[in-house]
Image (cartoon, rainbow, N blue to C red):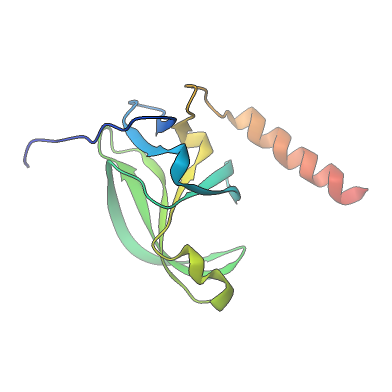
Amino acid sequence: MGRLFLITLQGRIYSCRHCDTHLGIADDIISKSFHCRHGRAYLFNNVVNITLGEKEDRVMMTGLHTVVDIFCVGCGSNVGWKYEVADEMSQKYKEGKFILERFKVLGPTGNMYTITQALQLFSDMENTDDA
């Protein structure tokens, strides 16, 4: 194993919540309206300082996708996934893009998205559906 060189980002940075390794910048966010099992997730055009896991097919809310998990190079934590292939034509825009799970990263101000906030979000969504 060679020496680890981390890319340092400038601007409004999203970083690993465990080790503070820079992962992405706010300017690369395509959408903040994604959700995962821990709550919110952000679709990024590009992220850095990650390693890729094995390809696997996953059935998600929007259909079947081939994805790879992405891991922080600083500490090895799973921070999200990368879309490799989308079967649905309407989902092709996701190919080659990255999801960072908000629960697993620090925001640009250093704030953490907690599981309590995620549970509140889902509770609010359920209450909205009843109206």
